Length: 186
Image (cartoon, rainbow, N blue to C red; front, side, top):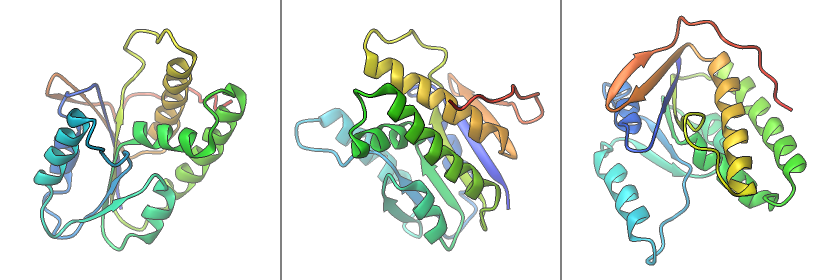
């Protein structure tokens, strides 16, 4: 069993790269954490359609923001796309966007659960996530909360992951052997 974290910016190729890591597998559980597109958001619909069209028919798609339960329920290698949407969904479900401390506490709990499972997953697991630390600091409280929470999630999961790859402008850099920084989750 191998765990892999694939980080990258928007449209960097991170999802395509993550999919290629499992394309030799006949069956994969693809955990889509993003919201269902609605007819008013054609851009999101196009992104979802693009992702769906690349998946082999033998892959099973689980559309859920409960990543831990989806991994536990899988009977094949797992691809989670993506942890950024998972953070957003977690905050939306808990209705904590206005309570920074509570939001970070909830995310720390969910991340600890995911981290424990991640280290003991019965199948290969690949997760895609956005690297938000290299972008501008958002000018809204919710944007800063998201950036901080996802940065913490990425650092925590990275610390317990076998392989960590960063995709920049369609290029893949292997970060797996580089030292890690001590994690502060709260």
